[in-house]
Amino acid sequence: QKEVEQNSGPLSVPEGAIASLNCTYSDRVSQSFFWYRQYSGKSPELIMSIYSNGDKEDGRFTAQLNKASQYVSLLIRDSQPSDSATYLCAGGGSRLTFGEGTQLTVNP
Amino acid sequence: KAGVTQTPRYLIKTRGQQVTLSCSPISGHRSVSWYQQTPGQGLQFLFEYFSETQRNKGNFPGRFSGRQFSNSRSEMNVSTLELGDSALYLCASSLWLGRDGETQYFGPGTRLLVL
Image 1: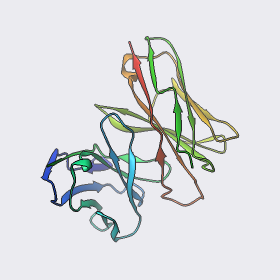
Image 2: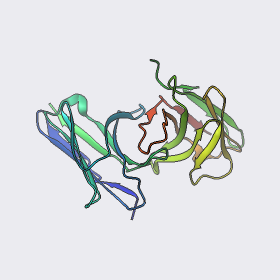
Image 3: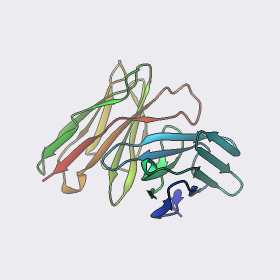
C-alpha cells in the first residue's frame, strides 16, 4: 500500500458546484496533513493544513480528517474556473509524503 | 515577507555533468527540505536540513547531496547527471519549532533538463 493515496481523477465539476477530493494514508505517515494546489508549470501552494480529527474551514475550502479511517478530504465549495489545478495531499512533518495528485477541472 | 527563492529557475545540462541548485528560505525559517517532481514518480523527498545538519534523507542515490549554510540558505548538488534526473527540483522551508506538522512553503522550483 502506498503511504498516501489520492483518488486519481481527473475530476471535472461545473462552476458553482462542490468539488470533493479524497486521500487515504497508511500507518507510516505522520498525523499531520496538508493540501497543496499546483497549477501547471508552477510549484505547490499551500491550501490547508489539518492536524486534528474533524473539520477545518477556510473560506470556500474545508478539510476533513478522520484518523480512525485514515482518511483526509478537501471540499471546495462554489468551485470557480480558477480552482482548476492539481491538488496534492501530503502527510508528515519535515519529510512530506505526497499522493499522486488529483487534477481538477472546473467548467464555466 | 519574501517567499522562498530558488536559483537558477531553468537549467540545461548534458549527461555526466554536475549541477548545483540554490535555495534561500523565508526569513526566519530554519528548516529546508528538497523534493524532486517528475511526471512518473510525482513529488519525492530528497533531504532535509536544519542548523546546517542533514536530518532526513530520502531514497535517492549518493549522487544527490546537499548542504545548508549558517544563514539557512541551502544548496543541492547532483553529480554525474543522468537523463532520468530531468525534473522540477523544489525547495521548501519551514520554521521548525520542534513540533510535528510544521507547514512547509515551496519555492518556484528549478527545472532541470538533462540531454
